[in-house]
Amino acid sequence: MRALIVSDIHANLQAFDAVLADAEYAGGYDVVWFLGDLVGYGSEPGACIDRLRRLPHIAVAGNHDHAVTGKLNPDRFNGAARAAALWTAQQLADDEMEYLTALPEVRPEGEFTHVHGSLRDPVMEYLISEPAALATFALMETPFCLVGHSHYPLVWTEDTGQANVELLDPSAPLCLRTEQRMIINPGSVGQPRDGDWRASYLVYDSDLGGAAGVLHHRRVEYDLAGAQNGILTAGLPESLAIRLASGH
Image 1 (tube, rainbow, N blue to C red):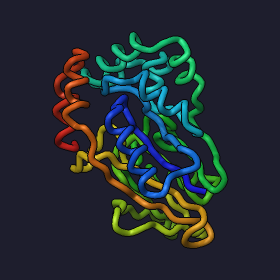
Image 2: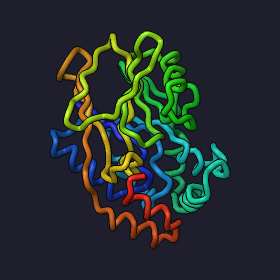
Image 3: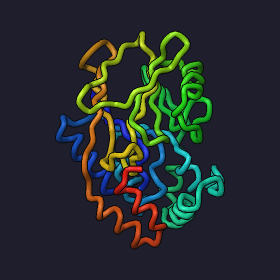
Image 4: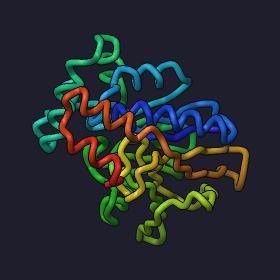
């Protein structure tokens, strides 16, 4: 089984389409595992929802998905993110809002648990510190946890009461073993923040490597100018277009 693992698409249709095409080129996939924040920031929320819904997939909610549907107060966001959430809420059809509203916050899937932020705070906690990682390890009931939210492609490894972190390396597949617990973030499709503007994602192959399979980290270029122009044409904050090019 091959799963395409994506997170933080953020209504960036150009990036999402590039990821889907690249994943097909790299061997295809049987299912999409989506880790939250389908909308927010970008200018194509309805089209991104439609793309995902047409694919075999499982998904969890992110904080921007909650903000658009009213489950989270967008006043908790910075100015640009708040503006994007309020704009997005005016763009979506009733069935698209219903889809986002119905997304669960946590979902187990075999040896993986899927969540946007962390198991301690499913939509809001950034899992970028050792205490946060240890708190999620303490709550994990599966060997592996897939998270998004920080927009950083990284892996936390549990080691005798400690949590060690490394950035994922596209040149080195990550072999999974059930006796080595990990928290893994595929990075962001629609708004990377690790200094590389290219869309970031993972492919999980359960039939390769050790007993638990292998994860392949991939980066792909997309129509950056098209995504930026969409943001500006929609009247969204210019900063959201500028940051796409910087990868921050």
